[in-house]
Image (cartoon, rainbow, N blue to C red; front, side):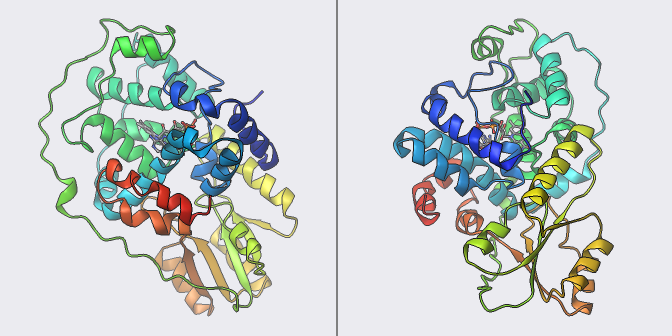
Length: 377
Ligand SMILES: Cc1cc2nc3c(=O)[nH]c(=O)nc-3n(C[C@H](O)[C@H](O)[C@H](O)COP(=O)(O)OP(=O)(O)OC[C@H]3O[C@@H](n4cnc5c(N)ncnc54)[C@H](O)[C@@H]3O)c2cc1C
């Protein structure tokens, strides 16, 4: 059976199953990488990243099957991605600096470090790696093999089904000792042996002692996150929504408010075959379940769709740092020429959380109970 379904109804069944059978043990077992099919973790990241399903929907199911007190760790993990995305909004230059560095790195077929070689294979074959293995892998990449963290982040970017500019860049920086300054994450053979349940024991193969001397930069210029204006769309006519990999369920918000809209799904090519197929298949599932939705593959098709549907008010998912698709001058100018109003819609989930994500996660997480209340979970 494939590890990642591309059907939303099957995904919901999987979440119910995970919530009923695995979630109560999640906090105890989540750090173990027992190997595929990774039943002890949710494997929800490719869906949450694209919001094929939203954080609220997942947590509503989880909470309906468990006492909320017993799943605090899972809720906290869900908020990690929100936190990283929010943090990058207030430190965008960190991403731009990453983009500006050279990232090419030729990888040897085999390094001789069995766990590392296996994780590399697993990532390429499945598009997924367990969180702990991502940490070990990144640490070995940087401190044992001596490659740059940027080239490692690029390797993940090219292969992860769930690639998220914020979680990936900041995850790599965290391992490298740049997020929590000079506190790198060191992969230790004992720890790998224990948390892989004895599958791997790279004793004597890893660089387990590192001393860093970076100078703190992160806190020097923090931008205040400026929330886009909140608009009530109740009285707007001819609304069109473009779903894309930044949010594939944004239309649900409008459906729940009984606002009428037309919808198209923007589907672009990915050079990685596995990721391309996954993306296309989840979009196909949306189209099959919404007969009046259309697929668009380029700007021309979008402008034709806008004209055919006589759209006057266009809604697009908000584009956080690293996720630009349509928030570009050429596209926006064309909309203006066509007299189409546009709005990059920020979900309340992000609107409420991002202002708290300027410092460390420890500080951010104190707001989680309030954020959960605001989301009515
Ligand atoms: C170097 C490195 C790179 C990473 N790159 C990405 C990335 O590109 N995209 C991505 O979504 N995650 C990334 N992560 C975070 C994390 O590894 C994955 O989100 C997680 O492994 C996904 O598996 P899961 O859904 O089974 O997680 P679960 O343990 O079931 O967690 C549930 C959800 O919580 C969120 N989550 C959990 N841990 C983290 C975390 N540390 N950071 C952010 N969100 C988290 C995810 O949305 C996940 O689906 C990275 C971590 C590291 C160390």
